[in-house]
Length: 579
Image (cartoon, rainbow, N blue to C red; front, side):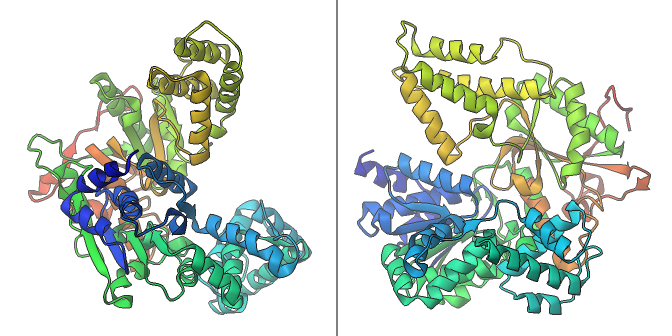
């Protein structure tokens, strides 16, 4: 892409986006509401900096929280003609620095990374003669992760008096000490140690800090509301006494406090840097006005809440609905019936998502969709390019690219995929065979959308590049996802299930802070929807009775005259009766 195209891309931003992308020096905070184009601003700001000569790509570090987000940033920057920017997660950046500097400092390779924290904890528990099941060990692992990202020593953590299940605070401290001894004996680090070791290296070794400061001059941090005290400290060490930092985030989407995320760093950025440029992005390009009205009502008056404004009015837009069912089984059947009806009216399955608070809620919904003949994929399962069917197909396409053939590109792709098991008609929904069929069909769709002059070799190279960036194609299936996993994604049609006390907010959320986090989770779910939003809950779960979520009352229903949610009757289904 020519350099002039970058300028036109900057000019295409809206006024507030352009303001954020144009400030290239000094501290900048972009408060970006859901659907306001934050990734676009990040990439165009970096491109503008390179285009004007303010930035050298190799001197820019863009920090994200997931490898997928880092891959998306790299992909978008490539489309803008920018190569060489370090777009990495905190852990990937820290690990790269450890591996580079450790041999020089210690005279030996950097320690290896533990691949299974629970297994090592189990061995430490055995040495202490503690008999702990896998679930308890996983909870202990989570507590260790929280302690480390909160920058607490084992003794400081023990002073909090926290227990994990039947593991007392004293036993937990002994277990953590034993775990650390095992790691040290094996010259291993865990995921959090990578950040701690990198921070310690930068603090203790001035020449290492000077080298990093020379390498990276300009920092951009995405999802800044989710940084932990440890990540924030590492960022401070990377910066040194420089001030070229741009943070982007939304306090209303802080949903990882349990993992150490602290929104204070975003909310207090202007206090730390009194001369910071602070830009609010509140024009939402995703959702219909009634959906935004529900989101704004839910977050009204909360710290850092932004007032989302639709890019245009839509008088005929569907308002969000609320449906009450007698049981979870009937709720799942009603969801399946609603999805089936929407597909019959022209919606594509990949445009629809069912969101819920906990993984356990998905099983009943999966079964109802399978009975209705609707294919579904659970988000957060095996990655697309890690699926054996996909790996086999990519290898077969690469092999076919070196064999001479008279067939054209698309016939060759079809032939290879048919040999791998792609049929004209899909298998029944709800099984591994259907999952494999959908994956092969997604590869074929990529081939059908490819340029006319593409070759089999170029196509297979493209697939491998997408795998590296985790740029996964869209599966033509309904998406099932927890609210946590759905963050950063969007769908035209969203069904948010389980809107009852005990489910959302979840039963173990006690205290104002925990309830606020659950409210933010509900906000994330609502703002994933572009065109339609359906909320539902059931009066009973097993033998227990439920009440509607307090968040529904905060949004309000039309039945009360002033609310936003329109109450509807349950659909007639084969698996349930009308309410």
